[in-house]
Length: 377
Image (cartoon, rainbow, N blue to C red; front, side, top):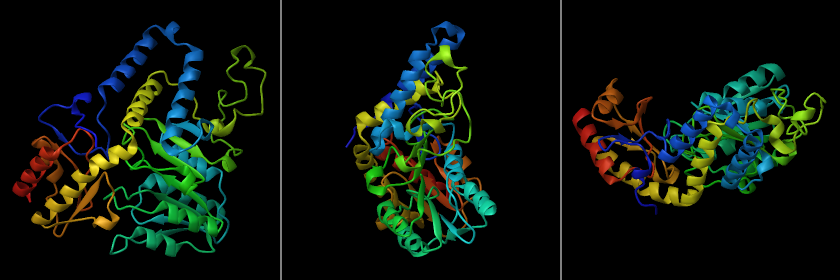
């Protein structure tokens, strides 16, 4: 268990922030790294090319360490949708074959597959939400001989209902399909290892549970997928691009591993140092300890929900770090705004109140949330 870490964040005492699933507040140390990076642009002679290359590699290594991969398996992207577009560009669907997704899945992990289905004459198969929240069983039942790609999250973004990706990975491999994961709503708060799940591609944004800056994401490509085509032909992704004196000795070859998939201007001297600092903090805390710390808050949220007629995701399907509370009747349309007026920040969407704490929260925050909900519901 991790002691309350609110002192490391720039959070006012009167704010109850339970929206890490939307965007994490910034660590003071991450802010300082960004400030120093921004100052370099005023004196650009302080921006060292070698330092920039080294920082990018350092960041790859930190992210790889979180998922049990090698640094060379990781590419830098500006968004989850960019990384998922790389995946779609390097997979084939085939006429009459399927991509499996979840009902109301986050759109970044749906639109690339709709486009691929139109291109290849395939279909997007949407798994309906199961009444018992057992997404795993429903997905396993949907995977069959016609399945070419399975594109999923670790937990549903609306309410945190979990999927067993190890079991789904085994089934996906058994039918010869590719597994593509968007872990933006779990990585950094739920332990994950690519060696157990064996995805073909994986993406995660930095700004949520990885506590990093906006407009930065990570793309993991399995070793068997690292000879594909990037969607952007950058000079820095080419072989020996570190040698500035020979940049116009144009090369058809790429940097080794997944680096060919890097976005242009990957060496952002503002966001990369911020992300390095954020991932170092997550690594120091340890993801398993973060999950263990948040689980009691999520469980208490579920227990309190029943007193207000709200239905939580059941324990068997519950994520350790976020939870959706479903309303039996229509929620007030301005509930989120009215809570915000009281300094309490959650996400209200689709008749679900999503509560997503982190290590800066405590039981007193839940007490304030439920006291407000008692007044407003």
